[in-house]
Image (cartoon, rainbow over all chains, first blue to last red; front, side):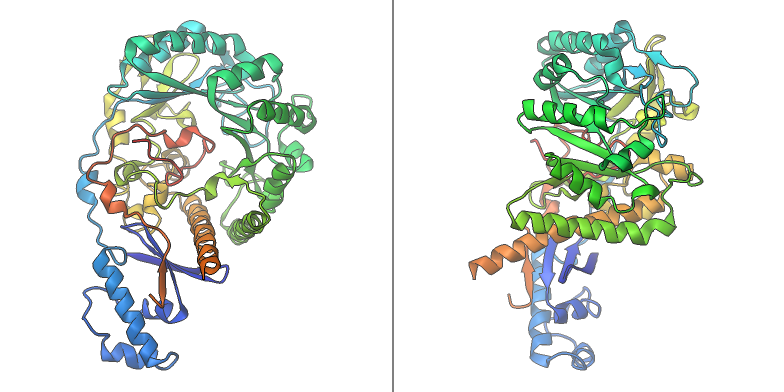
Amino acid sequence: MIHKYKLNGLNIVLDVHSGGVHLVDEITYDLLDNVEPPFEEECPKWVIEKMMRFHDERDVVTSYKEIVKLYKEGILFSEDDYEKFAAYSVASPIKAMCLLVEQDCNLRCEYCFAETGDYGLGKRMHMSFETGKKAMDFLLENSGNRENLELDFFGGEPLMNWDVVKQLVEYGRSREKEFGKRFRFTVTTNGMLLDREKMDFINREMSNVVLSVDGRKEVNDRVRKRVDGTGCYDRIMDKYKELVDLRKNENYYVRGTFTKYNLDFAEDVLHLYNEGFDQISAEPVVCEPTMSYALTEKELPAIFSEYERLANIILEHDKQGKHFNFFHFMLDLDQGPCAIKRLRGCGSGNEYVAITPEGDIYPCHQFVGIEKYKMGNLNDGTFNTDIKKEFAAAHIYSKEDCKKCWAKFYCSGGCNANNYVYTGNILTAHKLSCEMEKKRLECAIMIKAAKAAEELDAEV
Amino acid sequence: MKHIITINKANLKNTAAKGGCGKCQASCQSACKTSCTVANQKCEK
């Protein structure tokens, strides 16, 4: 299977099953519509005749030979022979945990999927140190041979339960040697309670920190509000700058959400860059389609064009030596994850779980409150391995829409939670998410291709 | 090659047989939390 598209003046061809990325000329781009395996040694006459209406015969013949050469090398029209690996997709050790240390929040962001902290459960709760310890023990004991254990302090707003966060980090560190494991702590915060003491602790102990902000002040403050209705931008930005500066600009993200209110979200990414941040993420909002800020199919053309604009902004900045990372355009074509990892994606419910302050276990933070997917509870020792098996078997070959999709080895079947929230089934792709993901991938691959083409030009 | 330039060197197929060690990061833990992109992760083998 191949996927070909034109973007930014480039003709790009992706060979789906080898991951091969090729830049092709117009003749080859057209020719690829007319040929497919099995290939004859010479270009079929009917193809030449058809192509000669628009192209030179000699070019058609040489282009065909190049296509066949790459086919024989296994990087064009390569076969899909991964399904046999998917068949072995059994339950894995648990290696990552999202710890909802605080099911309360000091902001009232309009679009919050955690429903301003309580996940729609109607109870605002703090996680006790005891429950946190049980969660960490659960992770340590269920992590098999995995050495790197990820633990994200999440909420609500985790800094509202700061003492417990610190105690849990200390507890985790105290047990690493005994188990032969290494915790990678991360924290996702809205920044409201950041002070120098917290910054120093975070920068010492956390391998990554995610700082929530949506971009321009007016965009951020329209939806990210304090309890009194005022925006949070002024309170958090200087704190974020200080934290990132103290962190020597490493291992962090400023992360925003974009909605129908800011379909020009490239401006928000650019704003964050201009404010001194170079690791930036902007996520499409996840919410009921009836909400006034919801993204629907109607918004797709605007979103596509904005992703393309953002890709061009990134390329232009690069040319001027101004580099910044946009999370969803990050792609390593040579050293990315192995094919096996790409079969199952995020690992929710299988190698990744979320724990609530009450000790309830869910497949991930986005499933919290969905009774059907409550996997168990740390206090009564229950853990439903049938749910774990269900998630272990949720791979790109068990998702009908994914099997035949060109993007399957990049999104790995998408977000199971999005699938469930929007379609009622973790195996049914949420089309809107897919369309946005595919556009982001096209842009990401284009950026790589444009840079490669530039380097080749420079060599000539 | 006159018509086609291949810009990457790796072949995903070569990673299948010995892949799946699980040392890499869970993909939702970094900066998305509400979507899934796996290809931007690093192999940590």
